[in-house]
Length: 528
Image 1 (cartoon, rainbow, N blue to C red):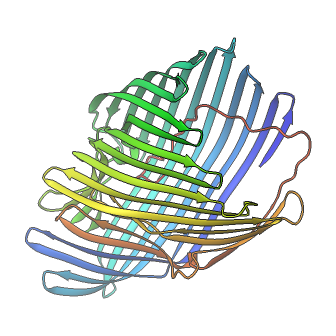
Image 2: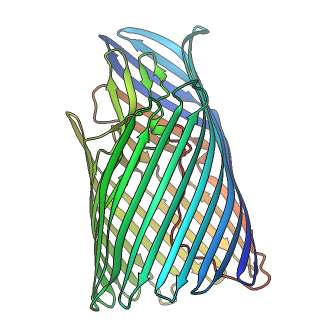
């Protein structure tokens, strides 16, 4: 990361690479379903297999700014991902009462390149008027190749494959005008987004178009000395044109109200209510069917519509000299929530994306921070939450109660630092699937012998046998399926970091931009 400052300008060059190469990835799967009176069951026991990827980002940026006057920022970045996975499995397959032994082999490759041009401009007039604009253009060239086969006695018994090549470009433009008064600020703005994706491996009906415009007006300020507020109202309009040349139009009203009450100098109470829309990703709208088993297939859903999410929260903050407490209760109601669902056409089980009738989430969380010593060398933190989810889809209704605990310890003494972190496994409903956020732990020691130099050593997943993530089916009787992915290489992973900051010339603080838009949808199978 290099930055050169002169006058009111700054030139920056950044390059990042994230590289992983594993040879001990294990994929297990248990599956059971019935179609046309025949019951299919498979127990797949994974073997150690390779998994590798490189994720790169190169960026050049230019900023020119003058305090209380204007900001101009532009950056051109190139992003890429190249991921390869394969797996080998021993399979016990049962069709009704007949048992077969098989060998499963899969290859999973996905990659993309994505140049992005981002331009930002903000201008202040007479200290009361401010105009801010942001324009982002993004292009994705994405490829996804999946092959899977099952062999019985050396002969191919079942095979499936999908190959997708997609070009996608998007344009996001947003402008907002602010008018500053003595105790309040008024603003009005609008954001437009256009997506155009073309699936090159289809000869016809290969294009998906999405257009969205969101216009809003609002105000923020103080009511007396105790109450602060932020209120806004907006209208969200969406137009989708699917690969079947069907056009769908949706309009949603999006209000937002945030009220804060200062109880005293060290405590406050905050209430927030807002309505948001969640648009279908291009990857979810793209049909692209392929079989996962003889009578079980996956397909996108070109008929998805946006979801409408209502969020309510009430939080309390209390700060003491050495202790901080932040408690929150929240409720969300997501109408037409976009999520994985399972359907049947009597001959196949179909995994796809659908609009749930609604998805509800109730959560209570608590954050604690404590400095037990007067010199503040030790910091203790704990974040905990408990939540209850309810999903409704047609005649099906299912729920889940989950929790999460994240304690951490930080010790800073002179040139030394010690950090200990732990996170429990968290299970949550995503449509008709139950997904886990894996448990994680780390211990890190850092030392700064001289200015600008930091040496760090640590271990991640100590006393673990592997990194593990599980996905299972929930809320439907059509299919029972549990998939467990383990990466043994991540267990007891020791690492060393050496960081030296080269500084010369006059230091300049980073710009604070009031809006940042980004397109993260590569267009293929929700692989962001």
